[in-house]
Length: 422
Image (cartoon, rainbow, N blue to C red; front, side, top):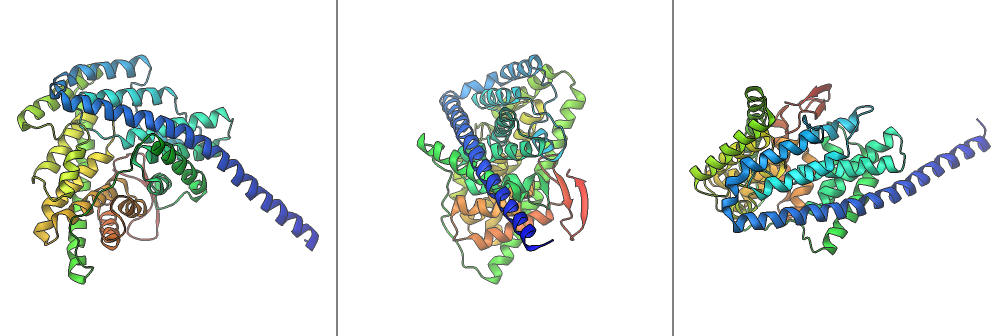
């Protein structure tokens, strides 16, 4: 090949990179605006119904009947077997995977209903599903090919996560990291980050503030304190494994023993109501945001994380909709607040570490988890957060919230294994 031909090839390659960059910047801005607006509607709706429920605690008694409405909606719209976030993971890694747009309406409506009547769920996983549907729909609107539609689906997931939670960098890295454990989809960096920041700006325009916490007491970065954090990381891994096991076991048990959707969701809702009455507290209904804040202030009861596991597993296993991520925050913060002082760590610091550590253990995303710690708590204690993330990631083994997530590369050695999580 002569110099002239090489020059033409280089110019052609450069033009392709520039054209692709411009195209994806435009598309991701479009997704960011759409995702931001949908995210604002979702966030405001959840906040509105949560306020109603907190002002009227008796609404929880109607959770079983609300479940019948959710089951009816999923049945008449032919989404009886709803794989949730697992479908979006499959849509990114598999060929010709269809994402039905009615899924967006269903997850939005069902999550709002679940929160109104006190189901023990979060909102971030629901936002991932909403965002994936929005991105996939925009991909169809612009007639994108299959590979580009995978990217724009990830783009939508980042946008909604960022709008709802206010952490754009975490939203970007999380989406490109959690699809397949062991690899990063770097081609999605530009579109996902652009969409995430656009969505965050739109959310801020509607006065939605990013989540942020303050650690009341830190400790110096010393060998002994690192050892204590390492032990807490092992506890986070165990808590994450237990949460995944309880979530999957309860879900399978309810489906195996109660085949009828209406009966299953009614029974599950009744169990949550009875549990709320027996506990004598509404702390385990909804997201439990107030409990998380109290834990990071240094106050939590020792059994809170166990009860949250059970309440969330029954709620989601029965067929109610929402997310598992904020419950993992609840579990990690309350567990850390209790276990940390036993190891000689301040309760507030241990709660923050536990929040991020359990999240990392159940989603298998150490880089996103480290970034999340900075966006939530600032950078002062980042070395400790880095330690707890890598420890909880490795010790959590093949467990995950999402059964469609794959361990492409082993956590133990640089070896391709292509194994489904548990």
